[in-house]
Length: 65
Image (tube, rainbow, N blue to C red; front, side):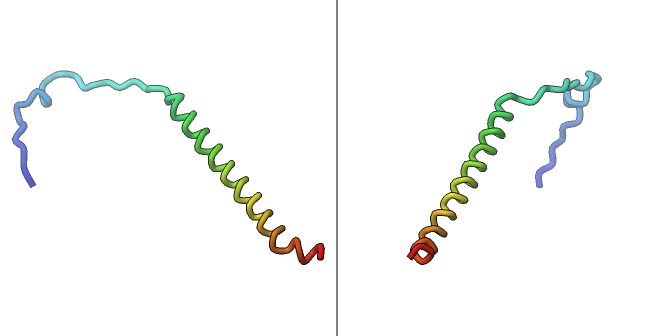
């Protein structure tokens, strides 16, 4: 592993540290999360409907025949 000799750099100077202010969360992040949940729910609905159709296709002819 390489070692860096950075003593005397401006990083260690007497300057004050950087102060970070709090930043509100992005609206895009909330939209992406909402889109992900909507896609998940839509996929679950499609899976349930597909399962119901499969069960009806398997047991339907014997139940009504």
